[in-house]
Amino acid sequence: MSAFDVDLFVIGGGSGGVRAARVAASYGAKVMLAEEYRLGGTCVIRGCVPKKLMVYASRFPDEFADAAGYGWSVPQASFDWTTLIANKDREIARLEGLYRATLENAGVVIAKVRAVIEDAHTVRLATGERVRARFILVAVGAYPTLEPRIPGGEHGITSNEVFDLARQPERILVVGGGYIAVEFAGIFAGLGSAVTLLHRGDKLLRGFDDDVRVALAEAYAKRGVTLALQRTLSGLERRPDGALDAVLSDGETLIVDQVLVATGRRPNTAGLGLDKAGLAVDEVGAIPVDGYSRTLTPSVYAVGDVTNRANLTPIAIREGHAFADTVFGGKPTMVDHELIPTAVFSTPEIGVIGHTEAAARALCGEIDVYKAQFRALKATLSGRDERVLMKVIVEKATDKVVGVHIMGPSAGEMIQLVGIAVMMGATKADFDRTVAVHPTAAEELVTMRVPVPQTA
Ligand code: FAD
Image (tube, rainbow, N blue to C red):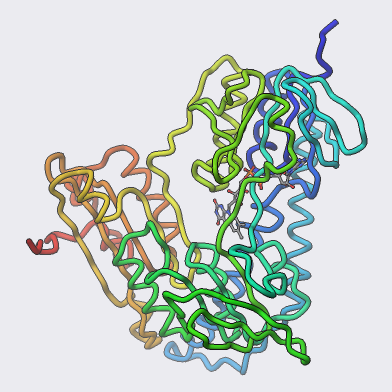
């Protein structure tokens, strides 16, 4: 008889954990998974999916406004927050059910409770039950922080709460300059809330190409988002009418209905018992792992946001799959974290793969930068005053395209496809010999002939 109850115990039923459990089970492993909240994890329950549904909701006013130039008269539109949230909740519950069914069909035993580690081979459930496992996979994700701590900070909400607000805030302060802050600022602005986006830096979206960062700030300002840059939040105070006084570092006070703090996320490792398996976390609380997601303790692996490598759903899924292939499928597999296509679902949307111009200059030696900024065809009749930005960065020595940056409608869809070419090592000559699809916005990617003149 085996000394173990299961071959694999997965802690966390999110993107990474569910994939790992299912694939390990398909290889014949006996698998158990614990989830303390809802199956599907951050992405499905309170991340990517509900967010994208809200992004869709926020973009209808653009369509209504643009229709006039095309001859349509649209009656005064009105928006009902309660309907959106109820419909979103129904869809999320449906997806949660699919996740459960996928696991059950694969033969994975689900425990709907918190689990912690007791030693390198033992997991203890909140019910008190102990499970001995040949391998433990930590896939507990991360949580949003209300940081930095400020007086009255508890009046702020995080992305966890924003999806379930009983009422749409008429005035909202969004704190942060990363993609989550930027996306929610866009959502609420589109839905008609008065939005202030407060960020301590001088530009939004650190790590993105500077042209994109500048163009997004301009687009947001035009769309009525008030940008409060190079300032921070000093304190929050509840007013008698229920609104909040938000005091900024320069002394300005904003009166708002909600303050959404989206300044960062931290791995869910507190109280997890990692030390009992001989493991330490790094300075942000993440679990260090090697290319195979293996920790320093041979029976314990970790995937997804808890490892703080690239905190995106498709990466967590790949890491979970690669773990199962490696440990149970006899196919040692590493995940490439180098070239990751990604999108920011701001309005206008952003799609990116590869190096920024600054990074390419530092890493690739001489480069050519091709840039187009233009009004989309649709905007001609609608009169919408917003420009599409496209940038292709080419390493001169090899002619390889090392970065593509797009801001404009469907940028996320475009970057997924152009990402295949970049991943395959496409050269600028490959882009040039690809026939344009006309009339589209994407054709600009293959019709840019003259690089931007370089200033010394
Ligand atoms: P998670 O999906 O967070 O799953 C971890 C699970 O473990 C959770 O369900 C949690 O309840 C459970 N858990 C934690 N501790 C325990 C315990 N001790 N016992 C039992 N269960 C436990 N990524 C994208 O790629 N595209 C996007 O557009 C995108 N948008 C996002 C928007 C928002 C607002 C947020 C917050 C995130 C977004 N992300 C997006 C990131 C994405 O959600 C994460 O990268 C992904 O969910 C990570 O998967 P994971 O498996 O590591 O963790």
